[in-house]
Image (cartoon, rainbow, N blue to C red; front, side):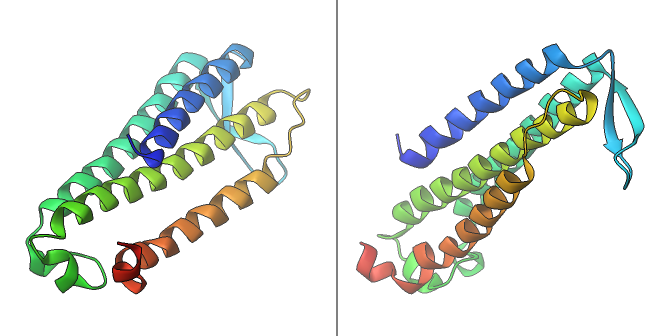
Length: 164
């Protein structure tokens, strides 16, 4: 099992832990959207909030994993990677499949971390005693996600022959 897959599984477990912890502290009507002044203007029941959060996580991760597995089945001429001819070669296709699936699990890992922060933000908006500063972490995780997207071109393009 690769590092990306382990981190992805840990991020799913972390999301579930954060969701359960925040669920316990949520009021019966959860404010989920706030205006510029920080005042809530859209509410969900606590149970509905839980199901929406789980659904969002499942749909996001499913879409990313579906992308990871479907792109590897594309014809060689449609591969969305730099150095397409290199990766389209029969001897390199299994490595492409493995690398692309690991890369997509990395994307899912960072998005799961961002979802965890959003859950904490919703809790912060509903409980005045919670004072975690999630903005900095949100910027850090978003920046790491952008770097991970840039890493795509390194893994599949620039240094392909040197990495193998």
